[in-house]
Length: 212
Length: 212
DNA sequence: GTCGGCCTCCATCGAAAGATAGAACCCGCG
DNA sequence: CGCGGGTTCTATCTTTCGATGGAGGCCGAC
Image (cartoon, rainbow over all chains, first blue to last red; front, side, top):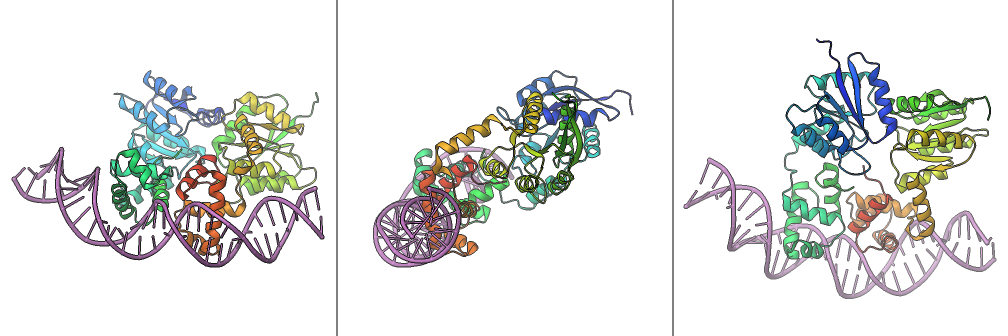
C-alpha cells in the first residue's frame, strides 16, 4: 500500500512481555514500536497523544484500571487508534467486556509471532482478528440469549457470591428476604441451575459477575 | 568471578514471553540462553540432557504437564539444574506445590529485568530468590497455620465451588453426605465462615482453590 | 509404641434455602 | 392507553444445610 509504517504502542505491566512483543514485532517490515506503557492509565494517555495506529493491550494489570476500561477510553475519542487485546487468559470472563468496549481484535499470548504480526496489520486496516477460543465463546454467547441478568439480579447475585445469606442480602439492598428469593428464583431459571453456589459458578464462567 | 557463562533453558508456552526473556537476559554478561522449550515435557527432556545451569520455568502450560510436576522431575535427578519459576500468577494454590517440588526461586513476570538477571545468578549459586508477594504469603502461611486446607478438603471445596450439593459431592468422591458435611464443617472453622458460598468466596480470595 | 493429624462415618436438630403461586407497582413503548 | 418487563412483596411447604458431638481407622512423627 504505502510506505508509512504502522505505529504501535505496547501496553503490558510485564517488562518481559513488552520486550518479547518488541522483539517479535520490530523485525517485521512496516511495523514500528513507538511507545510502551506499563499501566492502563499510561496507555490511555499515550494513545490520546495521537501518533499511534494500533495499541497492543493486555487485559490485566497489576493495579489500577483494567484493560477493558482502558479499551473503552481509548476508543471513545475521534480518530482513536485501534486496540488489539493480547492477553494470556482465554477463559477469562473479561473477553466479552473488552470486545464490547471496542477492541478490534483479541489474541492470546501463545499465538505464533506470524499470527501476531498478521493480526496487527489486520487491526490497522480496521478489520477483526479473534483467537479461535474467543470466537467460539462469542458464538456460544449468541446461541444462548437468555443469559442476561437485570441490574438488580446482578446486584443480588454479586452479594450472594460474596457469601451473604438471603437475609443479609436483603438488609444490604433494603429488601425483604422474600424478595431476594424471588430474584434468585428468576436467576436460577435464567442460568438453568438450582442452587446459589451453582448460580455463582456459572455466572462467573459467563462473565456476568466479577470476582477479582 | 569466573569465565564460564551461566547456561539457561527458557520454558514457556508463549513465544512472546520466550522472546522477551531472551531479549532481557541475553544482554546480560555471563548469561547464555542455550535452549527453549514450549511444553513442560520438553523442558524436562532438555534439562536432563545435562548442559543447563538454570531452567526458567513457567507454572502453567496450555496442555500436558504443569510447572510444579516438571519442577519435581527436573530436580529429581542427581546434578540437576536449578529451577527458577517465572510466572504471572501468584496464588497460594500454585506457589506452594512448586516450592515443595524443589524450585530454587519464584519470580513474577512483572519483575524488572535487573531483578530477573539477579535472580538467575542467585539461583545458579544455589540460593533462593522469592518475589515479595510470594515471600509474604509464605510468612503468613507460617504464622497462621490454620488456613491450610488438606487435600481432601480442597477437593470437596472445589466441587462445592462448582455448584454441587453435598449429596452430589459425596457421589463424586464416593463419600456419604455426612462425610462431606464433616469436611465442610472443618473448612468453615478454618476459614472462619459459616456458609458454603462464603467459604468459596474467601478460599478464592486466598487462592486456596482455582477458578479459571 | 504413643500421639496427633487426616479421613471416614453416624445421628439429630434448628435454621436457611428453594419451589411454588400469587399480587401489585412503576415505567417505557407501541 | 394497554402491555410487558423489571421490581417489590406475601405465604406456605419441602428440601437442603449447618451445628453439634461423637467415634474408629490409618499413618507418619516423635
